[in-house]
Image 1 (cartoon, rainbow, N blue to C red):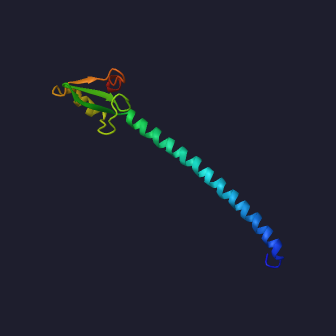
Image 2: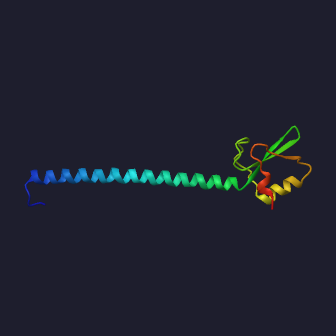
Image 3: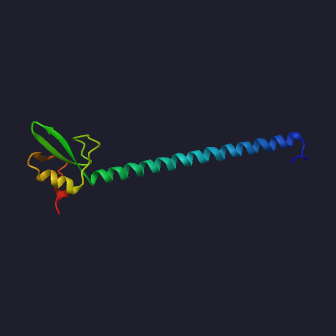
Length: 111
């Protein structure tokens, strides 16, 4: 390339720069697409994990309510229970646990 006149070298470098810019923009767009896909997968996995669990809404008026993990009635995002823990809570008379009438957690607790 050094044996070419400067104008020709400059023209080739400008074309190369334009092509590299296109490659970089194309790569960034593909990266954004894959990042969005990864985020959707992460959210779906989190939602599936939550749906496989239960949560207890703290007692109000001596009433504790058991929800499915993904129930939107009670937005608590911590304290998820396994099936076994939810069954233990139901057996504990001191908690006076009721089932949420919206998400209906009972079917998932049946053996």
